[in-house]
Every structure is written in C-alpha cells, then in structure tokens.
Length: 226
Image (cartoon, rainbow, N blue to C red; front, side, top):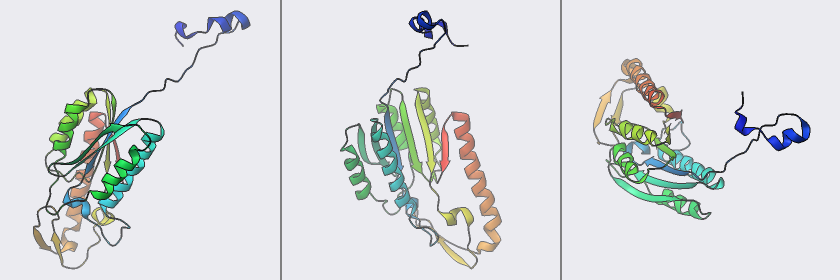
C-alpha cells in the first residue's frame, strides 16, 4: 500500500527485498496562548487549592515550557475587555522567563468582562502561517464571535485548542443555605435559595459545556476541561 516513490531502490538492489524510506521532518511551529484575565477568573472556592486565574497561570507556563523544549516559538496574549499584554512568539531559551514574568505581574482587574473576540481578532491580524492556538478561559463570554475568528484561524492551518478552567463549586454547586451571589464581572448581587435552583443551574451548566464541546467538534478544535 506504500507509494512506489518511497521505495529504497539501493536497498532493494542489495537484498532483493523492498524497503520503504521513513523519515521525520523537524518543523518549528509558532504557537500563541490566549489567556483570559477577566474578573470571573478570580473565583476560588474553599474546595479549590487555587483560583481559576492561578491555575490558568500555571497551565500557560507549563504549555510554554513544553513548546520551548521542542524548539517551537511561543507567544502570550492576555485579555479581558481589551488586550492587557502581548508577547510575540519567540523560541530562544530565555523566552520562558519573559512569559513567566508577564504571567506573574498580570492579574484580573475588578469588574472587567470577558471579550475573547478582542484577542482572537488580533491573532487574525498577526497569524497567517500554520501553527498552534491555545485559548485558556472559563469561556463565560456571551459574545460568541470569538468562535468565528477561531474558525478563520483554523482555515489558515492553525490547530486550535480550547482549554476550559472551572472551579469545583461551579461544577457541583454544593450550596445549601440562603446565599448572596455576586458577579465578579458586573458587581451585581443576587440573593437566592440554592436548593430550589440547583437542578436548573446544573442543567444549564451541562448545556453550556455541551454547546462549547459541540462547537469545537464541528469546527475541528480540540477541547479539554480543567
């Protein structure tokens, strides 16, 4: 089933057996990590060892380390409603220090919403060749236009990965007593009886995650939840 052009004819002349040449081509990819620094990423329950933001910081640092170890170029874009920080992709060994210093000094600001489309539109301007895009976020974004921008990047041979970071309490909703919920992005307060709303909340959360996964499947993206 192999193509004839891959046959090693010199080996065939010596042994009268067919051998197929195999080789690995080393490629240097350009990767960009798009990190959500909106206020909702600050959430940390008592069941978590770190906030979503702290976990996302570690995740981005680990990804950068792995990419640089295989001599790929990696960059970082930090966004909330606007672009906070932008580090262009580089592959030299001390670039990891630049990325980690940026991650350490950035922090979500109060009452800043999620505008992933701002970051994805910037990537459309600077990324034209094949590469990797990692979006690290809780994806609490009502504006789904970022998916359209990511699909355009996918059409440019970019491999897109959506890495969703959620807190254990966001997934399990273990609240039992009357609770005052506060939005970290808008500051809005809601007093609610969680036992009466838990079933509805969990159903909506499943719908939200399933819809994100389905969009990834249809668009050719990779999806992972952390």
